Image (cartoon, rainbow, N blue to C red; front, top):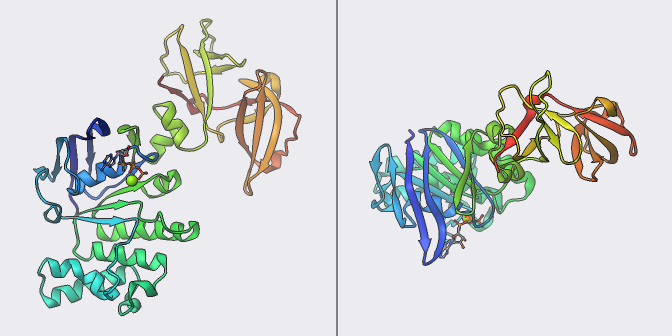
Length: 353
Ligand SMILES: Nc1ncnc2c1ncn2[C@@H]1O[C@H](COP(=O)(O)OP(=O)(O)OP(=O)(O)O)[C@@H](O)[C@H]1O
Ligand SMILES: [Mg+2]
């Protein structure tokens, strides 16, 4: 079971401080949406207003079209999982998972069935009699998830639930969370400041910055078509190139003349103002190495870093600025080589100022 979730003009101030500017966000039923952004950008504030733990200064929250802004947290049909697992230390694993169901006055049989199902789902059935302190961090986090899933909420909010785990366990739990999302079919809103986690898990990412939404889109939208400099810089490695429209339109269409030297052809459908300065984004995997005179840009290889499956080449352009290019190992470039770079013009993204 899943529900559609909508925040309409939702905002939060603490005195003069703005924790969240007026914000609109719709999450589809069954969707996995991630709130991604740096510390202090308003992720937890937005999540807690959805849950009802924090009252908004303005705006409203709707679940399946019903206004729940003034409905208390326990009655919104929402489950929450936090970074600190907040398990009850004096209760067994089984009782921890049963707690929410007993609070909801479910019958004994219902409680037993739901707890057993939830423990099976997180693969912790054989740990039912243990106490939280007898579990590892990852196991405790599974119990926190089971406790939330047991009463089958139609919306589940997760605030950095894997933040306390080491890298290896985090990656394992990420795939568990993906599996659980599919199995439960609930709507998930997940908070993280880790871009890789957001790209791996999400149907859509809501990128936040300075108390507002910067961009909402699928992981590929955000990676391939970031709307702003901030979005380009926050997700993946970005090469930024500055320049102005070349007034001498060539046979192949419009192009940007770079301040650093070089001419970048624009995709056919691009429409850019002349006179203004423009910022272009090129991801490291787009360019190919060619002879210097054939490149959109050219320069000298300043550094080569080995990454296992491929290598990263630092190209120093004529004005000293650098570009990072991912390149196949078989090409074996050398430091000091003079090279040019070309790429499919459709892999150039024009950023808004
Ligand atoms: N109770 C509060 N009183 C005053 N200011 C608050 C309160 N809660 C949050 N803020 C402020 O609101 C802003 C947004 O905080 P929020 O906790 O939503 O950020 P976040 O994106 O979750 O950050 P993090 O990644 O560090 O958890 C911050 O500047 C924070 O200091
Ligand atoms: Mg937070």
